Length: 449
Ligand code: S3P
Image (cartoon, rainbow, N blue to C red; front, top):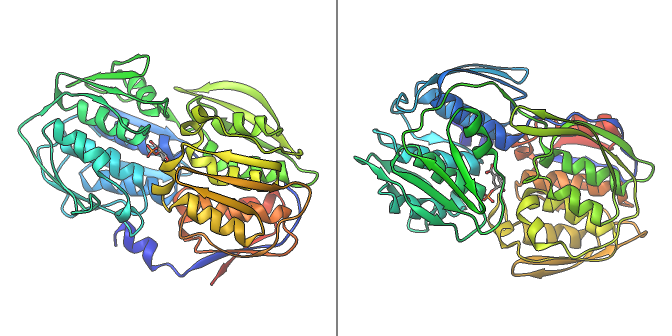
């Protein structure tokens, strides 16, 4: 059974969340999804054995793991977040016997597309219904400029049929959108290209690929907005300690900020500056956050975050923080709904092509809870309720994991129960979310509905 069949065959799951309550104690969130995907990919292409700890055992990163097993890579685990990847070297992957199904995982599909474009065998990438609607020309167009042969549907979506080509050539690519997936896709393809591939980003995006490539002994040069990698660079296996995922921590940062009498500690969360826009945005809204025990976890900085209840104020979200908080915006919308005054987000059209159209889906849910919003082409205006409570009601998450987890936290400030529907994909990034949140005090129950 493949990843899409697994996610598609589960009974519909919902979160029933009691109104009010608080969050207290210590919450350990699972490993970072972006880093987990990359650990499998680079570990597989490296010479030698890579030990990974803190790996996210969620459906998305497990789909990446299964894809590499299907290409002949021996991977032991996962066992409590521990993996051993027996690297096959840059040219050691084998043709998969069937299409590689990456389920809901956009990162897997876009990064693998670059990596597979340089292989000597044909392959096909497919995903679930949500991923099959998401735009792929953003990667297939620049890969075609490198000489890759990749077929999409006429709409530019998956499945992606990748044919082998005699050679890829390096390009100098100015990314039209700020996307770490596109950047990483091209850097991975660049490992197989003749010459030096250069990617220029229009705004800073997450740099996990560059950091991990450097850890694996591959020279990546960064000069301002440009990142360069040389074709043929070999990777040397290196241990990877995956930090706790700040994107998963974000739900608790918001939940504890909006709840009464909350006091929560989130240990060893990844605080890579290209990911921590959520902290800066929450601080600008008046959140009470403190950072303790900063340290390095391999190539990534981590620290403990303490968060306590606060009176939040609406803000204009700074444009430069948008790509640095792109996955945390659904949670931040809930913070905005509970803040005093208006919050304005613009420059975030990318939210429309995530696992759902997160602007439309979040606005519909907020309206349901009695929050006034104005939907903009590239963002949203949210009229915060301040000290007034949110309403309750039934919310359709449209199968989007981050939308589901964000609305579950909204119940902390609601006056009636919140039912969040279609939550099975929460397992893509945060398996066990309901249990972890319940242990911290959220009145959440998972129900089959
Ligand atoms: C990711 C990059 C972001 C993010 C996604 C993970 C990554 O996507 O939204 O969840 O791991 O590189 P974009 O590159 O499309 O912005």
